[in-house]
Length: 142
Image (cartoon, rainbow, N blue to C red; front, side, top):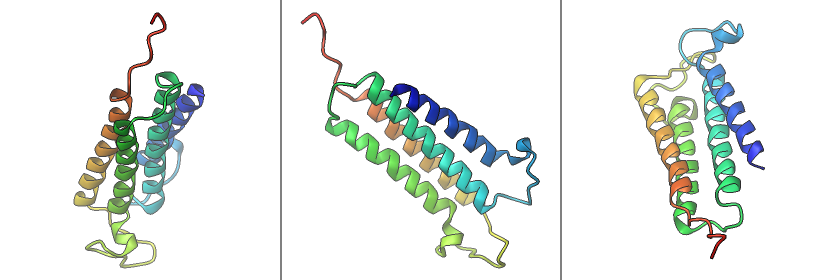
């Protein structure tokens, strides 16, 4: 099962890089970051976090139930992803400061980018909390 976590993480990294740098794949891009690009980045980072959580669960804490700190870490990771999605799609969802001026034009500004990065960092901290604050595995010699 930990191999599935590694595969999901690798797929997430590839998808996030394809969203961040679509020119590498040969896709002709417009100006700025579009809805599909941000969707690819958000999905990629979500798969990266999910793969990391699966890997840690089935590699380090395979025979143990999650404790309260680990459950907080999972919820923090997922909350960071939801908040990153809300920050990135703020104008599309209608609560951003610019809105959609034309059907094909969206605006992804500096404040949105900063909030998305902060939310991604919050999500990464949640994964770290899950990995570090679990109960130590039982000692086989005891």
